[in-house]
Length: 172
Image 1 (cartoon, rainbow, N blue to C red):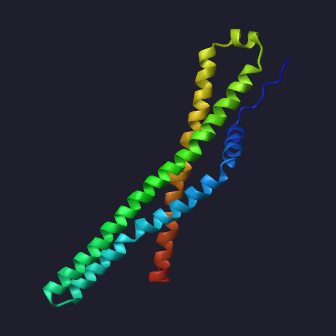
Image 2: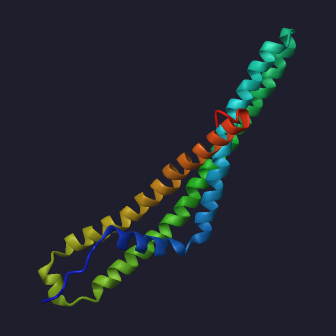
Image 3: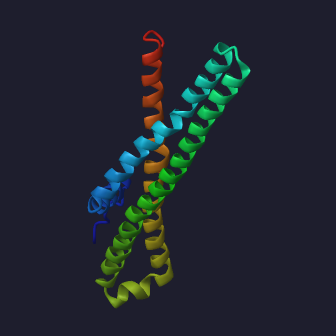
């Protein structure tokens, strides 16, 4: 009797890691873009603080309004750059996901093609195709979770703790 192979999560994650290693430069580009985006997400509050400082410290209303509007223009430009960087980040994520998913499809169907006719007659073919599709879609979802969710949270926490340490050492 044949021994059944263990289809563990670790084996699947190792396969995904092996598949993503081929496109390491896109992953590193995504990593650097996420760091830059996180910095851009934390810059507007500093400008807003500057506007409040202008309003509280400047006695002449005309000067306060002109300086505040100038800072608001900087904030608008900052948000525009952030928007463009976010679109570039999403495009690079697609450049990483698409070839990796294509490789997963190709390798999975090549593996299925090496089986005999009896294997396909015993197993419903569409169920096999569905399993391969789930396998490939899981690679996309996992990468999205890691690149977009986890990395943004991690770098956000790093910048929050860094800012707090810079502002007050005892609070950090």
